[in-house]
Image (cartoon, rainbow, N blue to C red):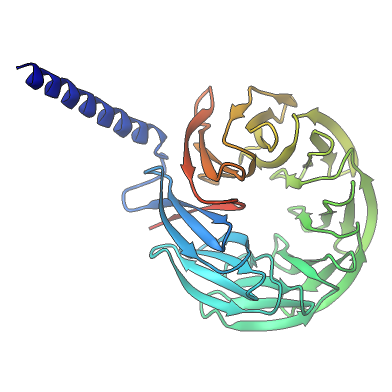
Length: 377
């Protein structure tokens, strides 16, 4: 009789736990996720693999071998595909999101590091740093559409919002190449900060900001005239630039300066400084630009920043050494994802409540680096 009572108690506990899990899944399930839609996160890890995470089940559901040193992880804007580059392999890889398999590998030349897409999603752009070449790829046939010479050691090609220009960051000769998107031919080559690594472009296609992680300055380039306007002095070497959607402000995160600097993009003047913590690394800005979440690599947490009032709210604890961040949606995010480089997991943070907090951590593999999210049917 006693054994029967114990069995009933255990059975009730199991039922209650199952109910709690089901309720938890319902609570975090995005409101936009209709039946038949899938919401996956993709995380690059050491050893050339990509971990696939189901953001509804909150579990890793697959691993994909993409090749040595994956980088430039991007979700295609219109196709159910994830793109990236293998710098050592000399190719772009394309994953079919529906099958979680590599659909093709596209040879582009030695040392590709990044991928960008045309406004209509029909073209992909990358660079071959080993051959000083800009490459355009047809996204449907995966055929090479054209190549053009660049400056020395190009590492990034980025399309302007109107799709008419391609900006190529030439790390080797510290220049920004301005190329015609239709012909790929170079229109101008502008000297910028040494060893440039990233570029931010205003929505009206007039100005570009060029950043180097090895120098505490940012270059401001006039894209219409193809000239350097100025170099802005920063408080410390930056790790990331984030442009406000309306283009009015540029937020520069600096682990060396332990904070965030705000740049007025209309006047090119340095604005407010916000102290964030020990080693702020990367950020994710809400679509309405009301709040910026910043990972603190040394403090193992993410700091929410009220952009309007320049105020830091209560930090959220994550796993070890959080770095790259991503939202589960580009419209009304309910989850924030943080890649924990030290502990090898993905922190899932609920942000759709008044008190944001850690929901769970999902193991993804050694030394995870980049993360993107894809919604598809």
